[in-house]
Image (cartoon, rainbow, N blue to C red; front, top):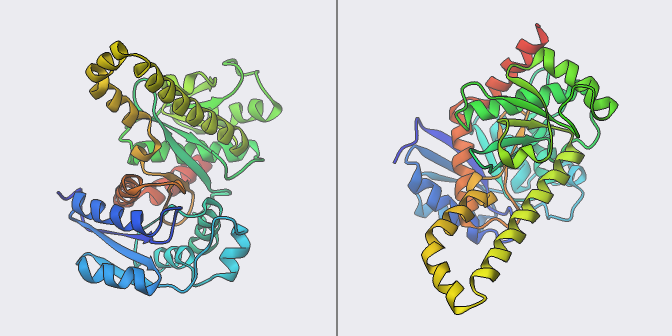
Length: 335
């Protein structure tokens, strides 16, 4: 079923630990889910050419290099100009596609998108966001790793970019925004947090004040803003906690015959819960602030994660996410 007007997404066939197999499976699933989707597949000739020949809405672009997970991101991007990641970003820059998806090296994807696509006008630093499941509805957390050290004005732009993502991809008409801190009062936290509070309060619509770590899973706000160091720690903690809790629930449900019977009754509800907290459901992490849509999947992505990553890329492209971000940043500069 079509999800909107025709849109083209570049997909890195060699991205991820299980590439290219799960990537190709994910492309097939995404094409089936969105009949207006077109895919440009970058990668080796023996992977992309026969696959494209069997799928009418797929175009192959043969590349001769692959950036491995352990390589230095910026050096690899500069030296491997014919890699599936660099070429994918170049195709977006040239206008042949509006979005790029890869489950490859996060650092390489970020470097290629920033160096090849380029930053949006007036955006000082792109940021990586992620969608976090909450008790109510998912929220956006950023930055989660692109910028370990930031200035207060960077957090203002992160807030504006996260708000734009919540509007265009999560359908929040008036997203609320909170700054991650160790207390709710404006005077709490580090010098950075206190200075950022004043700037965000005066420049970001929907700002509700500081939020604490416990507010993230509770879904207190639609967008949670912090520096990349703190955001990455918070993200990894939430991922590890959810994984451990699911394992503990599984162990408890199979610890006796009676519990196993109860588990059979609860299985549909537990499956829905698992899907809600599974990162694969939300399609990867968007790199916000570059001239094009860039969604980065987990290295361990399976076909479902790839499918959802491609579909989210198409959704963001159709909504004109980069233009929305650029306008939001420009409007803030005029205040």
